[in-house]
Image 1 (cartoon, rainbow, N blue to C red):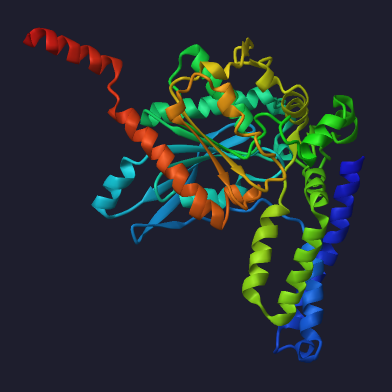
Image 2 (image 1 turned 180 degrees about the horizontal axis):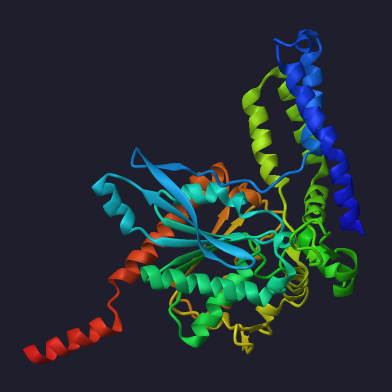
Length: 443
């Protein structure tokens, strides 16, 4: 019933939020009679804050129309490359009329960014995508809101997540002959599983894996997120945070972990910070500091937009990653699309390079959790393994904002390029055989 109560409350608040928005505009308009009031700016700020606290936050758009490359504005066309029941593989295709620029763009590495399925939309990585587009062909996993997925599409499991990633990697390899993978936060675990399974089968692997702020080994430096999963049983999660989608959505009847519960958890981790942020926004409106106010809106339009997760996926992630530590203990079996169980063996990965990134002040994935991937990937030679700890960076700072652009991205870009060009220079088995034959015939 909690989901139905929440939706009823949201519907009840909607007209009040709309009224508050209209009132804020009236009091902020100097041409209206209300705007002549000496307290009009303060009244407008109050109504504006009420509107933002009560409004419904829908899925944001990426909104990346152009990027600057070598002082040229390059047009970006966003399109869906593969449409799965629970995810879209989204491409950001670059266009230019300059032949020299086109030549450079064509030879740049292809990167699959695997966005988290942990409550927020993939647009949370907008800054990641925009920055990467200057030097890479970029694709991203855009996970769907489970409450919008009809029951006829079936359930979604953690195994399905792993299988989706493998399908996307194979698609890019078939189209371009290569790809590099970047996983941010939650997907570090299923991405490592996906590549491990491909390695065990002898499939072509991504040239590099970059893993950022993820719970590869959640037992290291446990955070509040980890402690909640450890201290509560599987039954507790199923009985207390899983609900069915109400009838007014396409996914009516689906069992989900609602986004509003996840959002409440996010806010509860740092309530003082959010209260101060809203109060600062109120003061910025009174002062007329439109730049700071717009920055607040930009952040919370993204932060407050949340999605529901399929119950099976959510519960299996809690158990596999945060309770059983199945990846690091070597006990994780994934069911492939044919229905067969396959053991996840990171030690079988040999052809990929590995870069891990952690934030010094990350309060979601603690210190050492992502770095643990190096201990698991024993088959990767040390020269192809790197780790970066970003001083002063929290969880979001390693993939968005100034530290991401100035500290993290340059190293990620150089790491990808080094392993991309090294792989291109390395002769294939066919090339080696031809060269050997030529040497024999010239003796």
